[in-house]
Image (tube, rainbow, N blue to C red; front, side, top):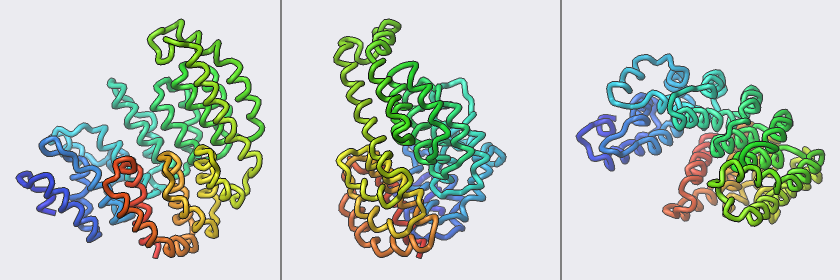
Amino acid sequence: MKFARDENTEPFLSKKAIQALGDVGDPKAAEALVDMMFKERRGVSFYVESSYALYQIGDSVSPLLLPVLEGTDKERFKWAEKNNILAPALTAKAAQVLGDLHDLKAEKGLLAALKFNNEMLDIKLFVRMRAADALGRLRSAAGAKALADMLDEEEGNAREEYVRALTRIGGRDAIPNLIKTGSKGSWDARQESMKGVAMLGDDRELSVFNKWAEDEPKAFAAECKADDGVKGCADVNKAVQEHTDKIAKWRKILDAAKDCKSDAPCWAKKLSDGHEGVRARAAYEVGRAKNPALVAEMMKHLTEENLDTRLAIIQGIDWLVHDGKEAGKAAQAELPKLEAQIADEKGKTQFMKVNEDLRRLAVKIRRSA
């Protein structure tokens, strides 16, 4: 702990100390790791290593992080101010780790963080997006209701995060607002709501996609008339064709939903579908099904090349293991293959970000034993 925190230690060596603390897994290290999660030294962040080490230690770190998320840990916020650390960073990073740990006690604080405000738009949205991500991982029904009311967000990346969270939570409650917000505003924002309908809807929404495709020439022409600097406005016809092709592709996900409805074994077969969106939806549907018999089939698909779809598969397996001991046992039988994959893909930049979740999945499976 001293070596990790020492201001005079080379950042690389502090990172190694943090990794060692995670491998040791002693809860006594949690306080130091929480500090290092927020700390920067010579422009180097220790967040990735510290958050993973905290995840390795497990649920015992939650009592340290919940007061940070809720803003009641006055001492830590004073420490942050003294060390020139922005307070919103504490909120966002605590939200992320609590979401990874599936700590339902965080729900109240996460719902509050969805309403976080700051005069700087990027800071405001950063905190809200991290809260949305955590609520999605928790499969929070209260989170779904709150997020459905935030879908008029015009910033494309933020709406994408809100829709992804709703997709993880599942259910049809958000579909009316997704349809409404998929029918107005900029293409960057509209397309995220359209994808949300594809990931949550069924054959009842097929006609909605037909109308979106029919209306797209007029909708995008109006957007370009209002702001000709929008991407694609230099060749409106070409852009409209690209948009309608995407709409038609997302519509196909509803065909899979028509076939499977809520039948998890049917969705498991769709994990081999040629459409990456169908595979992603299948992973979420199977993951929410609490069926341990489908764990082995899900784990066969962890080598998925599409990053968003791989993330969905990882999340689905994570939920299955979280929800039952039998699923944990089934996953343990596949663990050697998973560990070999992690070793083989180490250093492959295309998988670097998503494989942080893959490493956490391996920890969860080992812990389930």
